[in-house]
Length: 472
Image (cartoon, rainbow, N blue to C red; front, side, top):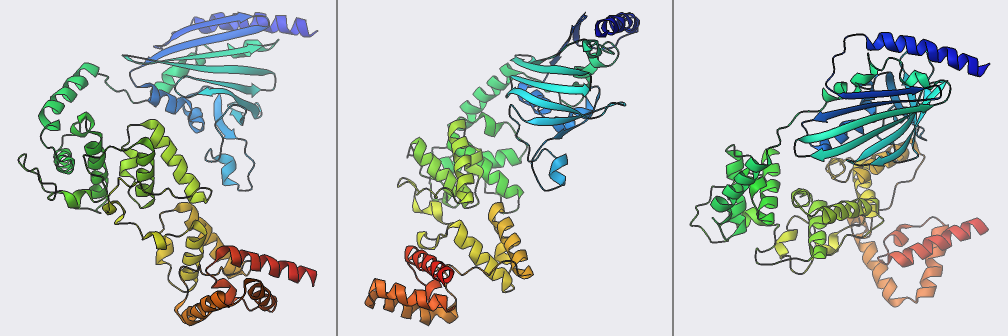
C-alpha cells in the first residue's frame, strides 16, 4: 500500500516538476536536481565577490535564515534555561555539532526538529532539518575562497518514499536560496595587486621616517585622522601600528587629545614619551610569553588596543582566553615581564592594592549599600558588575547577607581594632587564638575574625565556627 502511494505521488511530482521547469526562471546560480522513487537531491552553486569570512558570517547566523532560506519561517535554539528570552535568542546557543534546533516552516506543517551535524568555520556547515512530519532533509553548505571572492555550494538530500518533497518547488523558489543570501552579503572589490603596491609605497615613504616608534605612531595617527585610512594597515612595524590603533580608539572615544604632528627630523624619544606611557622601549624584543603577559595586563587596566592590534592570532586568542579566566576567578593575573618599563603600569594600582575578584565584589557592594554606587558603575568587568548588582538585590530582599570588607580595605572606624588584632596575632599562641576566636564567632562576634590579615587562618576559623554551630 505504501509503495502504491509512493509511486502515485512520484508520478504526480513528475508532472508538477515538468510544469514547474517550464516557467521562466531568473537566477544567477548554477543549478541541478536529482529525483528517484526513494531519493532526491538538489544542488545550487553561487559566486560572491566577498571574502569567505563575510559569507560564513551569514551562513552561520541561524537567526537570519528566515530572510533567505525558502520554507523557513524561523529557526529557534534548543537550550536548557529558565529565562524565557533565551529560548528565542541564539546568545546562549552552543554552535557546535550535536546542538539541536527547532524548525518552524512556512505553511500548515507543525514545527520540526533540526540539528547541527558538522561545522568548520569558513569551510562547511552540515545540518539536519525537518520541514514536515513526512520528510527530513540533510542540508550542506560548502565554502571555497579564491582570488575573485568566494564560491558557496548548497546541497540538499532526502531519502524515503516522501523524498520528492525536497525537489517540490525547486525551480520556482528553492533554487533562489543563494540568490536571496546574496542580498545580505556586501560585495567587496578584491584588488590584491593594488593593495600590495600601496603597502610597498607606504613602506618606502613612511616606515623609514622615524627611528623612534612613538613618533611613528603619532605620525600614523595624524595621517589616519586626515583621511588616509590605509597607511596604518600598510605599515610594517607591528608596534607602531598597534599603538596607533589604540590611540585612535581613545581619541574617537574622547579620552585622549590628538597628538601633534611630529617633524621627520625629530628623533628625541622624550617628545613622544607621553604618547607611549604603556609601551616598552623600541629596542626591546619580547618573547611570546612576555607579549602575552603585557597585553593581558594592559587589557585588564582598560587599554585593549595593543591586544586587538596583535597580528599573532595564537597569542591574541590565548590572551583573550586568559582574560576570561581571570575575570571568572579561575586564573591569576600574570606578572608583568621585567622587560616592560615601570610606566606600563601607570594606570594600574600598586601590586599591594590589586584585589581578587571576590575582594572587588565585596568592596563595590559595600560602597553601593552605603550610598556610593560610582565605583560599581565604573567597573569594566561586566561579570563582577552583574554579580554585584544581583547580590545587592538579594541583600535588599533579605535573602543574602552583606559581605565583609576585604582585609586590604578595612573601615576607618575599625582601624584601631585591626591593629589590636595584629598585635594579638603576634603575641598569642596560634591554637589558643583559634579557640578564642571560634568561641567569639559562635556568639556572633565576627569583627576581629573579619579583620584578620591571614586569609587561610580566617577561613579555618570560619569553618570551625560552622562545625561548632552544627554540633550544638
